[in-house]
Structure formats: C-alpha cells, structure tokens
Figure (spheres, rainbow, N blue to C red):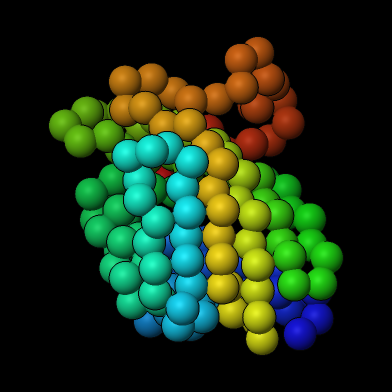
Length: 143
C-alpha cells in the first residue's frame, strides 16, 4: 500500500481510540497485531479483538482525547508523536501524557505498534520546559 494510505490508517486508528468504537478500531488492525508498551506494567497486547477491547476499556475509564501532533511515514512504517489528555480515576481535572508510536503496517493494516512514553497518574508526563502551548500541541483543556 502507499505511504499515504498507511498514514491514513494510523490517523483512523487514533480517531477510533478517541471514540472507543470496536469496529472502527478493528478496521485499522491486522488480525495478528502486536502492541508493545514501554512501561513494564503494560504487557504486550496481541490480536485485533484484544487490542480494540483494550482501547475501548481505556476510553470508558479515562475519557481520553488523543491527537497526533507530528507524523513521519515511509512505506510500511509510520511514526507519530502524540498527545493524550485524560481524566485520571477519581480526579476532576485532565492530565497529560505524550509519546511516540512506531507503527508497522501490511496491506494498510497495523501489524505492530511500539509505544514509547512515560505515564504516571500523579503528574503530567511531558518534556520539561518544552513550549507545548506555543507550538499548538494538545492541552489539558481538551474536550
């Protein structure tokens, strides 16, 4: 598939993460997808059904607003820098975490995601001193 088609698949995946829609999520994923997480607490999630359900559950609990801030694509690889504003359990205010996903695609379906990020519900996880607001990144005020 074309680089642009693969980039659109990743955009569609993030849009589906914002809604928690199982069918929309599965439409972007290869049946044998593997999602790897940097934090040790998160074990890999394998299979389109399992990954779609993982993100639906995340959506229900945290009401996230995901946004791709930057994307680079080359053939079957798409790398995105993303922001996520979410509501931690039992807290009234959104918090932020940001990261990078390295996506491998086959036939315009995601077959592998390697997620590089830091996440702690006790604080925002962002680059120290980076001018997010001035550069138009997603903020905690996202709805």
